[in-house]
Amino acid sequence: MNTPVSKPRLIVAITGASGAVYGVRILEQLRASGVCETHLVMSASGALTATQELSLKRADIEALADVVHNVKDIGATIASGSFTCTGMVIAPCSMKTLAGIAHGFADNLVSRAADVILKERRKLVLLARETPLNLAHLRNMTAVTEMGAIVFPPVPAFYTQPQTLDDIVNHTVGRVLDLFSIPHASLVKRWEGINKLIQADQGSD
Picture (cartoon, rainbow, N blue to C red):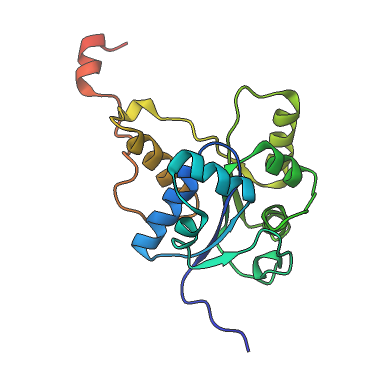
């Protein structure tokens, strides 16, 4: 007998591109709010990058998730379309992972779970992190977009006048959660139109 799902479930994957803070911050936010059941899968490169960038051990990050899956466990629940969830976010998404998804090369649980999300027509958000981009990267982004994924490079929003790195990270995380209709408090500084003082200086056309 299947156990009823008490609240929405979100798959969070962390791969080896720079920007581990995005995946960690998503987990921290959802752990604090309790609005989602999080299922984490992290590649070996993702754990290594997190250690380098954030001085966090794998166990520190895994403690933020409700359920942790081994990246080599192709038999995990999230590898099946029968696993109901809101969707999946890969934060950050390496170019290797992007390529694997674009070409259906489900060789580990990250790319397999993403493949399942796409075939079930659920929401897949990829925080693709690389610069500059070569033609293979661009073509792979086009391919996954045509499949239904959302490519979401973590680009800073300077119109919000961020004061700290946390401001930049939180804005991106809030916008990602918006895509899944997951409520959050004060992560995003919402656009309220051009500053009226600027309008007064420039005059009206």
